Length: 235
Image (cartoon, rainbow, N blue to C red; front, side):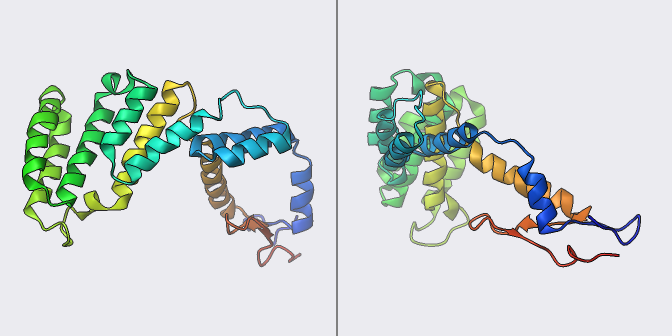
């Protein structure tokens, strides 16, 4: 490790960096748990079963339950909200009764699908019968309902100011919210740990960039340590 002056960045070589990393104890079982956590929460049942077999790691979660949860998520992603709600009620009858915001968002997504299909009259009736009562009980949801109803003023095929509600990303948002609720109802983490660790890695590197030149990971998809210019300079 070298510096050109007391105020300059430290230069850390790849060899020195790898040596320091090798000194950090990391249990293989902890890494396996991290991978299994991601596979289960994201719904990769086949991969989870194979990884469990290869690693010898036995999950406390019934891997068969992943299929039910993923069928519900796929239903929301495809816009089939009625089927999703029916399957949720079969799997956990109390979930939507105890989470009015989640139930509202599912009903809101169904309303969006009706508007997408050009069923204006059915959408108005549905909003009045199903969503308006939620708004009366939970005033904070009224703004979301009003915004959704405003879609009726635009052609679904046109790019309106509210077009994000019709994007697949909005279905995905609703599906993720429901998936997290189903996981929490079964005492499982709502989010996988791996993405949070990757965010922590990015933040840590940003902080370290201000103090040192060191081998860093520049591409999370291809996580290879890359020695930066100046790391081999000496004084």
